[in-house]
Image (cartoon, rainbow, N blue to C red; front, top):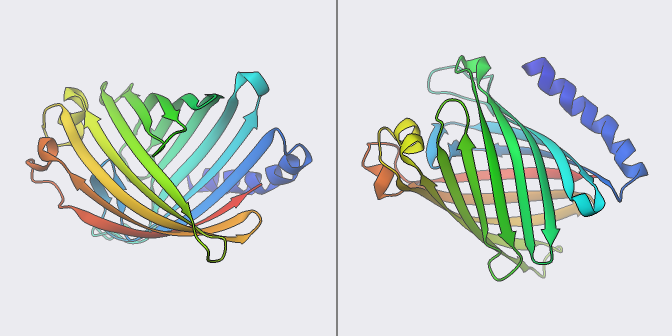
Length: 247
């Protein structure tokens, strides 16, 4: 898995020159971030430091919308079980989206690979709808095809404010998660269907160069009544910083 990830990111730099030749159609984005822990849908998967990276390559196909592929990984910098130095998760995503006036629709497939920590893999499909209006609401429905065979729904909102400092922007966001019986039973220790988790976030985007942005962020997450009675992790903060390069 490690060699495959390195190869993918090397290929990304090769793709940037091709993307620049036809910048109207192609877009390449690279992310590198460091956080003090890894939280997924309200569940604390790693309580120590992590490095996370992403490569996103998309193609604007006119009236057909945008199609793309994204590779994302989580690398454990430290671990309570002394298993640092592992890619605990790598996600491979194929996606499509198209904007109709103020409405953006999307769909895709995600392959979650946990093989390096001997947890196998699972697959999800998803559909999404976002509206360009006050708070920019977005609804995404995930369906697990393999391990869980159930639905997870994420509702998010966000708002951005321009700052008079270094051309920076201040982002606020919030999300709410809902799991059906199968998802709740598998991921939330036997809980029944219901609203399981939430998050509140803030971030500041500092443009360093035309295509490079530095973003420190703070996220407060927690489990709701339908999940937190299962003696899972307490509510907590996640502190992180991300560097994004876009071509």
